[in-house]
Structures are given as C-alpha cells and as structure tokens.
Amino acid sequence: MAHGIDPRIYIFKQKGLIFDIATDNIDVWKTKYTSYERAQGLHSFQRRLNERDETDNPELIEKARNHRFDALINILDSDETVNIVTQLNAAFPDENKNNVDLLIEGMINHVRGATNIRVFRHELMKRTQKQGERFADYLIALREIAKHCGYAEEVGNQVDHRLLDVIIMNIRDDDVKRKLLEKGAELNLQKTVKIIEADEAAKCDEAKISGKSME
Image 1 (cartoon, rainbow, N blue to C red):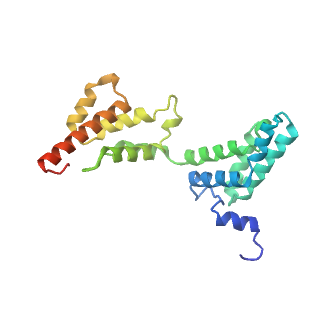
Image 2 (cartoon, rainbow, N blue to C red):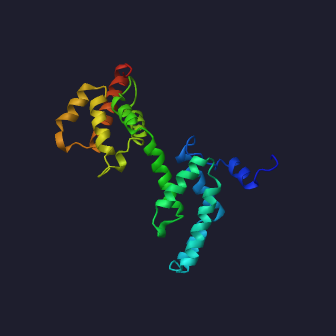
C-alpha cells in the first residue's frame, strides 16, 4: 500500500466499495455496500434502538444516522458524486437529513434518470424473437431491457402490459400471434406465457416424432 493513502480508503477500494456515479454500476455497488453495512454493524445501532423502544430518543437517532452517513461519504470517489449526494441531502427536510437509505435511493434515481430511457424503450420495442430462440429465453431478454425503461415507476406498474405488447408484436409464430389476438381484453402476460409455452412444447414433441428440428 502506498504511503499517504488513508488505510480505510485502501480497504474500501479492495472490497469494491468506492463509488463514482459517472463510471460505476450503482446496482452492483449498492449490493456490495449493503452487505458491507451489515458486516460492519452499521444497521445494528438502529436495530438496538428499536429493540429497546428508544426510537423516540432524538439524540440517539441522530447519532445512528450520522454514523451511517459518515461511512457513506467516505466511499464516494469523485467530486461529482459528493456534490450530487450533498445536493440530495440538502433538499431533504430536517427529519430526513443524513438518511442513508433515502440518499442511496436518490442516487439510483439520479443515475437512471440520467440514462436515456427512450433508448431502452426503443430497444425493447424492436427486440424480436430470434430464429430458434426459446420463448423462455426471449422473455428473460425482454425483462432485462424493461428494467431500464422506467415502466415499473409508472402508475399501476406498466411492465407486464408493455411486455405483452412487445411479445404479441414480435414473436415469430404467426399462428400463435393470431391465437393471442383472438383472446382480446381477457389476455394478460401470464395467460400469454402459458399459451406460447404450451404451443412451443407441442411443436417440440411433434418435431421429435417426425425427426425434424424446430425453427
């Protein structure tokens, strides 16, 4: 370890805990940091307050909150990241100042908001089922793209509705597509998955009997 480096920062770097909002994957970082907090007992003080019914003690609550906040600030790796967290914290009402859970949520929203959601939505809408691709794999791919489309944050959580539209539009089998469209308003994503997987399984059985490969 080089001279002059804070040993805590060195440890944080080794554990992959240092975070730069411009370059790092915030979901991966959040998982690591949450695990680090548990291991270091940063949540335990608040838990003890709950167990001892001292959640109405302002001094102890502030001490627990500031302890977690200081640990978070120590692992921010750029001025940009520090400035964003500082601005988020400044915008909170007094009762939420230095609330690490709210700050991390705010960081995630900032990162996702900075990403062009329309790019992901366009990618989702044009994602067709590839030749030979099993429907289960196709659905996994759609769900992965949909994570970045912002549909879960819309009123009523629009993820399933949007996935249903994409599937009907982009599945390869026209006969199955017609079956789905005939269902009309009663069709939902769960029913769609059952219909497609049943048809896929039937075609697979037919292919085995005839000795042909599925397209």
